[in-house]
Length: 331
Ligand code: NDP
Image 1 (tube, rainbow, N blue to C red):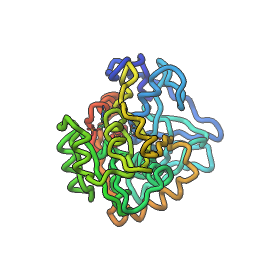
Image 2 (spheres, protein in one colour):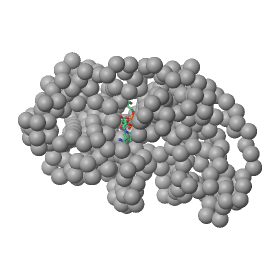
Image 3 (tube, rainbow, N blue to C red):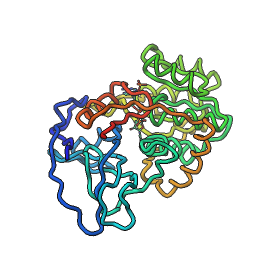
Image 4 (tube, protein in one colour):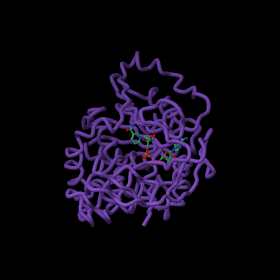
């Protein structure tokens, strides 16, 4: 079984030489176990944190060990009565062709209603991140003005559409004209800023939101957070989901320089980890299905073929190569 191992820890931007392809020998399954052949795996920005050594909210990847992450595959052998051959399952053993399980941390998904890889995106971790951030953290009210960074990405594109479905005014930022064109053509987004083509993000944000913003859904940190704090209305909320602009930094970033705004404007700023909210998974799926069926929520996938190309797909996240959810098709 082919797998991708961590060859070395990246200093700044991850490079292909930080990864190595390797072959593991499959041992027979024992009583209570089953074997899964992966069809799809996810690459996610949070994996960059796991490539660093030291304490974080998830334990670091180990050198010469296979990486891990969300994956969907088919049960091909089973000695577990709850998991049958042919079942499509969601697990956390991406970056490899096959994995064994006793069922712990593995969920059977309904792949008849939506394609299986949907459980890595809009109905999976990234979709749920958008849903938790808006509903649980921001407690979003209709009529609010929402600003979301990395708006065409896996999380951001769902944030845009969930906030529109709630009757909000939504402003996004993205780093490429193709991404902006996709948002304008496929979502009801009110305005999009190409942050790479503006030298004054705050001015662009203020002209898109002349009455200020009530919620900032932060995927980027740095200058985006600084602009959001400056444009925020009194009693607004910063949902701290991610800070991708800082993940490859070797020195701590300086911005936001205007953090004191949280006092004067009584801003609520709250970080969250989607994993803490798994009790709400059924409610999340229940909310999403009608939005998907009514096409109020649509999504895009960027697909790379072959497990050997997974490192490139991962590195591409930090270069803005993906539109929507970045996936790797394994089989
Ligand atoms: P995306 O699909 O949004 O992909 C990453 C995107 O980030 C890129 O396409 C790029 O878009 C943008 N980006 C990359 N580097 C920079 C930079 N230096 N400055 C500004 N934008 C940049 O990824 P996800 O949707 O999976 O994740 C989005 C965010 O959500 C991440 O910060 C991630 O860590 C976080 N997250 C947090 C979770 C939680 O539980 N708290 C769970 C899941 C994700 P562009 O071309 O527009 O720049």
